[in-house]
Image (cartoon, rainbow, N blue to C red):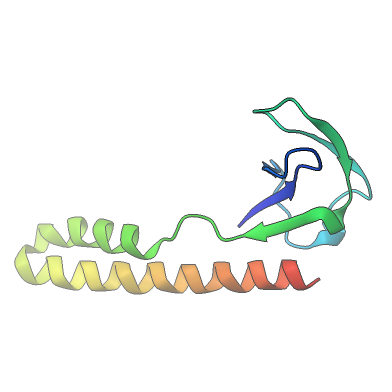
Length: 104
């Protein structure tokens, strides 16, 4: 899960380096610097939005398939399917965390 605030000057996304699971884990007020534009401003937890990170389903299938390749064609298929399943499960968990953060 990636957290960001929208720059008050240029409306671009400013990603936070913090890893938190709820808005209450953030300080009451903090400043963020928009690295590309140099804009510095103060924000509150209500300004922060969560979005899902990189999907894991495809990567899980690829890694599982490569590991399964050691077992031959059947290992490739089973490894890829298992990796895709685990990646999809990870993606579903990520979506739940994003939804919970944004609804708090």
